[in-house]
Image (cartoon, rainbow, N blue to C red; front, side):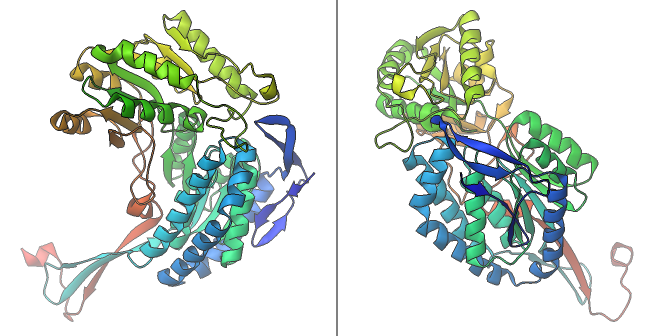
Amino acid sequence: MEKFKNYINGEWVDAVSGKTFLNYNPANLKDIIGEFALSDKADVDNAVKAAKDAFEMWRLVPAPKRGDIMRKVGDIFTRRKVELARIMTREMGKPTFETEGDVQEAIDTAYYAASETRRLFGNTVPSEMNNKMNLSFRTPIGVVGVITAWNFPIAVPSWKILPAIAAGNTVVFKPSKDAPHSGVIFAEIMEEAGVPKGVFNVLLGKGSMGDHIVHHPDVRVVGFTGSTNIGCQIGEVCGRLNKRCSLEMGGKNAQIVMEDANLELALEGVLWGAFGTTGQRCTATSRLILHKDIYDKFIDMLKKRAEKLVIGPGLEKGTEMGPVIHEQSLKNCENYVKIAIEEGGRLVTGGKRCSNPALADGCFFEPTIIADVTDKHTLFNEEVFGPVLAVAKAESFEHAIALQNHCEYGLSGSIYTKDVNRAWVAVREIQTGICYVNAPTIGAEAHMPFGGVKGTGNGHREGGWTAFDIFTEWKTVYFDYSDSLQRAQIDNY
């Protein structure tokens, strides 16, 4: 069995305790991916010390030089794209055409971060005093703790890690316990690209180790992607310890389909949005809001197409939907279906584990559609993180918008309509950080801000230029060359 170690200060090392854990292929639980270091507080202390020491050197490297290394990172991700995609599929399940897209996001982010190192603009503005100059510029903050989920084990970490390092910070990265191999590959790529020792560190392990990172006094920034429950706990700790944190948490995203929409296009959108990545995206389409005039027709169209989706291991050619991540996720999906039916939902298709004997050793759940769901139902309001779609009927455009906004989350929203006026009203009224017109709720691009409102996040935006707001501080400088004391507002007015 292959054994994988932590990456600390440029060295591959076992956990201090010597403990390990096993990781399994969700498409075949008999397939053990490997034995991974089970880190604890001592390992966190070692990694944070390495990152803190390296920061003193790394922050002084000219930003464009840091960008040169980011460009090499993108080149290596490109070279290893197909190989890495298969590694990711084996450990977290989604088909290789999706994991190749996951790697491509890291490639795009690396090249974008490289270019942004020449655009870390400040502002020079006039002073209100004579012979005085006012300016501002960005400075790196220090050690950044990055904690991410398993569903995008390369793309999402890249959104945090690469801008943080490009901006002059150092990083301690905890990949998910369900996708640790991808974290190991990330370290290999950073090492090959020439990232200096201590600038990037990877700790393998489980949830308690992430708690040590958040509490560590030398970790100045925390970047987190995961559940709303854990994210809120992290936010409380960071607030108490006066640390900056960026929280990207849950979603319960809705696609609205109006009566004038291109129904075939809307159908393709909801199939991809609801069942891509087996519904295991924070931006997944987990609610479908249909105008009453096309409600029955569209459900019938959707049922026929969903039942034709090819389910199987992501490493097999032709697979359209892979497994959920583990047995607990299977049970979670079953439980939500049971609750939905008890509350009055109508099971249209799916609702259970796949019965195909060839898939018996994996965590496969049928694409599930439950109609006649109202805003009072549990399934309409709570995140499932699986291939379970709730369908609700809207009496009007205004009702559709109200249903869309009836949710504690606010990550992504979508509307299908040919009415341009109605589309612009929807963009204004939908309470989400991301909004799509005539496209599904998934499909973020690396050079645009990513994040949500309400229960989805705490105001920061990953992706694009806004990521650098998370990982830099503003320094304001007043340069007085008048050779006299000027007391600002006292003497000026």
